[in-house]
Length: 291
Image 1 (cartoon, rainbow, N blue to C red):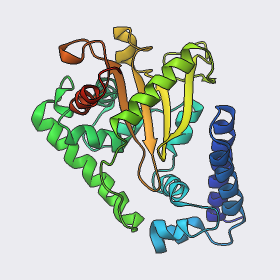
Image 2: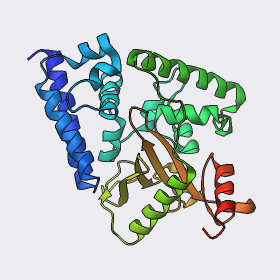
Image 3: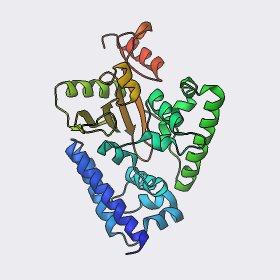
Image 4: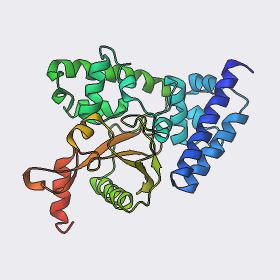
């Protein structure tokens, strides 16, 4: 078997593993089935996926039977980076520090501060934080270094986007805060009632216990995954079971994330708010004061 054909089989196996983990974690059966059908199609496809991607970009992968735009984007991530962040998260092994060290000028200590200070673990989510001005607030960064990181990160992601060739999805498109707050409410309610499956995260879990509840759901066309924050900052402040990280995507958009917390000051004190979207949360609560 050629190395490229072996790559097809490796991608198919990862898709199958993703389907198995989604099923075990209570995801929508249709989503599970979609990954399995795509895995079978990839394994049986006569052409090398890398060859298709390099010649036709994302539309070429999307055209493979049973591979829609979302799974095509996952395959593109595997081909360009060698990893699939969603699978790492399902396994509980995601390593944001290692990922952030691939950014020029970002070493191990700074990568850890970016992850723990911002609570993000994907390059796309870090880019959003940069455009919102939150990078400069990370200890040891400041405005000048934040601009340099943001420029390096955008250049990295733009190279990947150009290779995908298809029409780019709208940048920074996110669900309304009502969807994120409802996902947060559902997650905390079901986690508190022990109704959710649990995973064993790699970080801060030396005994390897499956303690972290996970919710997979679809809300208004958005695929969402919610987990308590397992960052060093959350542990340090005793906020692990208050901060809820929500990952979301739809169609071929890259997966982004937000953290929902209990506000401790100002007019929203005591309310659940989406970090970085506080003004929208305030407007939403004013329109629905009983919530």
